[in-house]
Image (cartoon, rainbow, N blue to C red; front, side, top):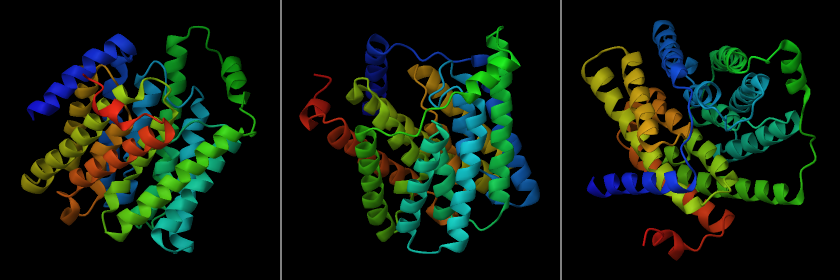
Length: 342
């Protein structure tokens, strides 16, 4: 525990000097928590766990509270991309029941193509497609839930943007929405996508063979994709991201166990407490990494017998993906990473 605290303090101190603080629209943070709570209440009331889409927390944080969204500035994409991806994942699960790692790989390829063709940067769409495969979802409530919840996020983002930008008019919104990156991938982008796919296939095959499914928890895959895009001093961010993801998994499991399984209180209370804790960690570190919010909510929909293994699998998965990124994508020498603080 002392080592973790020391790493948090050190990485926070270094990050302030090198990349500065991540600015957030703090007044909208309660809305993120409310959206997550409403999602959980509806799920409990209807008895449909498929309504819960953990990545909603990440999308809401990215769209509503971060002054510079990591997934672009087009509200429409926050709705369209995850919705199409959710339908893709469900269709694969229902009608193409092949080996799980093949389905995951296929979903990854299809969603990557969808994002490229649409010109979207909303990488949590990958999670929307992979989650139903990993959880064996069969219900059409899942894509319907994603459709509605992401629609709320997109609408909320448009309102928030108009609040911050007094010159934000309907005409300007239409103009921004029409601007689309042409589907013309460069050689470097194709190589990067091939490396991403190869990494996902290899890690998925090993994880599924040993029945350690949450090593490839969908938010971890999103985190991996996001991290390969980072152009800053990667080995400094690695420590903070690793701490965030691991703490998020631990918090999610602990709150769920004590609130829901031990005290028999509604699941939305544990979700709210988990979200409050992860947002406080964001504030403490002065660093926001939205996929961590999805990691803290994912325990809600996993089987009880996998609950206490979940944080360990997230820890292992985070380590594997972050090391792959450092060594293969960023070409950072291991010794430089290990001794960066010396």
